[in-house]
Image 1 (cartoon, rainbow, N blue to C red):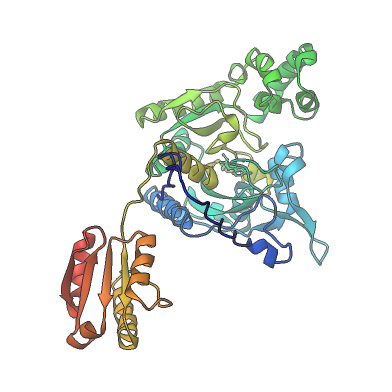
Image 2 (tube, rainbow, N blue to C red; image 1 turned 180 degrees about the vertical axis):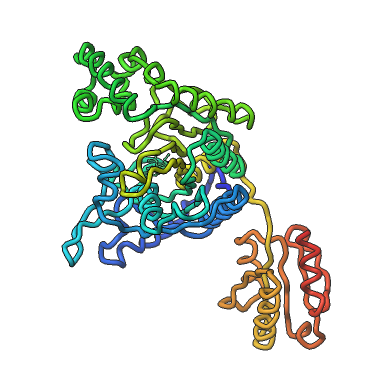
Length: 456
Ligand code: HAM
């Protein structure tokens, strides 16, 4: 992962003498685009930071594949009604945050705010209940929520997620939690899993009667938002982040006491599997999640030590045994999770800053060329290396060695390959260690082997 340099490490030395003229600040590009900038809450992913983004995607693919999940991609646009029906009309995501518009045919379109509903739709559309069960899929892609932009909250963000469809078993839930937990661990993040069970729809209906009775008795202590939620979707009061609501929520009746025997047993088994897998978890009786499709197990993952900042869940998920049936498919047990990639990246960068890790690890190769002949030969050599799976950076726009070595330094490569007139003629190339400055001459035919040795 790239680490940012801390500016706080050394105090700037005091300067004496006449003040130097301040450099003229470069005009931001937005000026040149006549006021057209990226939309609020949406951002460009640019190098060099984009390397971290790609690295997370690579880690996601590696771990999901190792757990036996196949890649799925569904469209970013769906019929708006898919999300409205699946997530629930009164949820914040549908009620406040969905991008909905009519296309030229008058179809009501929704930009996907999450991917589980779309995957359940795909399961039904493709008759996946006829495939060998369970169907295990993973995904990576942009999601869209018209939320108020703030740290860790964007209007376009990326999720890595996995869903297991076609099996109702506690081991499935435990496997998904383990996958999410180990993905974060692979990214260098120690996390804690918060778990709860919200039972079946029937369990929940009975519990809600009790909950509403309790909330009514405490109405005057509740925030305005929770008063509204109490009427529209009482479970969501438990999710409130308002300080004012905390005491009321802490004393509220707990849903686990309303679980049917079957749901209770299922939940206990999930916890036993988690113990077996040595996944650290905490029971969170007020965890209900913000989407209506969940049944039984629900969970969220937090970076260890920052559980209290509830808005910063790195990921979450749960079981949704009724969703596929609700969308017109056969009764199908299913569960899944999604992890917010921007939050993972944010956590990693904050930690790198806190730890004062200044030095980016050096790695990679740069090819510098001197003269027209060398440039041509450099292209041939790079093509050969690329075919052998070795990527080499270059800067053909610069002709002096000094300028090219500067580019190599900026990229933080460990070695620069130098090709001048002499080397072109005698079929050799120099390999320069960027730390020590030591150079060795290598036969161009043996370049690949020499690079591989250095990489090892
Ligand atoms: P979710 O909790 O709505 O669940 O989102 C999962 C993760 O996406 C969050 O924990 C967070 O990291 C990230 N996220 C959500 N909203 C934003 C935002 N505005 N900006 C940045 N990151 C955000 C779901 O989406 C479910 N589909 C999870 C699931 C899968 N349940 C079953 N299967």
